[in-house]
Image (tube, rainbow, N blue to C red):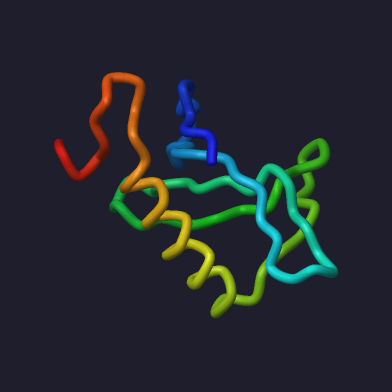
Length: 86
């Protein structure tokens, strides 16, 4: 997982990008973990131009979001802290 140095200027804030291998038959690169203004986190597949390269079943997306959020929350930042220390 790569923590985002530039979090974007839109409504959704980019937290991290990561690669996902849900099975040995499928790999997704550049999946994004985003945070909405209300604090909700969501995942989006990479884009090609202005189109998403994949979409996820809501239950699968929720599982991936929870897992990615856990990894993000526990990730150590450049200053040696993580979001739980804040």
